[in-house]
Image (cartoon, rainbow, N blue to C red):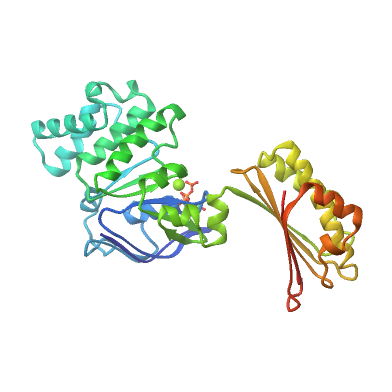
Amino acid sequence: MIRIENLRKEYPGAVPLSDVSVTINDGDVISIIGPSGTGKSTLIRCINLLEKPTSGKVFLDDMEITAPGCNLTEVHRKMGMVFQSFNLFGHMSVVENIMAPTMDLLGMSAQEAYDNAMKLLGTVGLSDKALSWPDELSGGQKQRVAIARTLAMNPDVILLDEPTSALDPTMVGEVQSVIRDLASSGKTMMIVTHEMSFARAISNRIFYLDEGGIYEEGTPEEIFENPKREKTRRFVKRLKVLEIDIESRTYDFLGTQSLIEDYCVKNQVPYSLAKQIHLAFEEAVHQCIVCTMEKPRVHLTIEYSQENESAAFALEYGGNKMDIFEDGDEISVSILNKIVHDQKYSWDENREMGNSLEFHI
Ligand SMILES: Nc1ncnc2c1ncn2[C@@H]1O[C@H](COP(=O)(O)OP(=O)(O)OP(=O)(O)O)[C@@H](O)[C@H]1O
Ligand SMILES: [Mg+2]
């Protein structure tokens, strides 16, 4: 069991983890997901003390490993790490790479270390590469050797940081299948990954990292099917969001159009949908501005779903109660009606921007 209490990690200019407390149970297979730079690597590097936490405590079983004087070699033996970039020794054969740490750190005899290494090479499907040099292996094979080397130490916990992201796509599957077997063998594992379907298939828990910590955690079903929080939902549904605020009648119309253009290009929005997004923006926002003529206030959120190739508009605007589909300009409404569906309007007189309108394209 690993218990993390109020873990904080600061770097000059970045605080990737502000306050993380969580318990990892024996046999848990946890996938850590989240946008780039949210502290996924930092979290697992702090757990096995490759990075020194700024504050907070980490317990492995009941031993506080962040306590001064704790035996780091022992910690690294109990928590094995698999890196994105294999880190094999180039001057040792494959089997020697696996044998070396078990002889040095576990005190195995050469024969024991060899037998153990050969057994593990069998597990990762590389018995025939025992005498090869790392340079003679493909990326996928190197990573499988690195996994065997980690397993050789028989760690209680295995931490993997994007183990397949440096691989040619044709080799991802072979490494994933080794990791999948490991996950179903009952080993406690934490794996940072960008491969959502893989995370879903192997884990019993998912941590979504954002805003300096575990922003949301749950079972794969909870996180991928019913995320509770906004950023999780956007991330797992691969929603690309653009937010636009308009606060004046003479706002920069062309500038805003080119903002939408850039957003569509960057997120590979199909051409026909991009055209409809532009049109919906022009017609809908124009109506919102008209109805708040005195003091225009419009907040527009466009969410493009890469998964479904569809877009959702959410408009909040000030002024009096006005559903543009009911009370708006006839021509604009007829144009909008041709391209949008599932429109939903609501009014809340207590809010400054009391009108809310959502629709899909
Ligand atoms: N050694 C370091 N010195 C300074 N800042 C660092 C260092 N390592 C990480 N950071 C910063 O901490 C933040 C989190 O980095 P981290 O590598 O944990 O992100 P990540 O979630 O693993 O991202 P990715 O998905 O791109 O691998 C980033 O803003 C990064 O720039
Ligand atoms: Mg990382």
